[in-house]
Image (cartoon, rainbow, N blue to C red):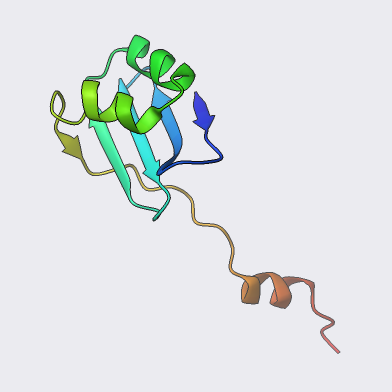
Length: 88
């Protein structure tokens, strides 16, 4: 489950219900991952008008951040150019 935000310092939250892990991506691209988070936290944070305030009030001091799961990296512009360039 993913929720994106277009403004504010929190830009994306992602929740894995099997792992009970909540990943929070900030506008500076930092990611904090919290394990053992119930799904209702994700659901409420997704609808909150101020996700940063929700994080500060309900998550920041209640859960210990862990290493975020590695995400598949996006291909670089150079690798895409090489893929689609004319070999001649």
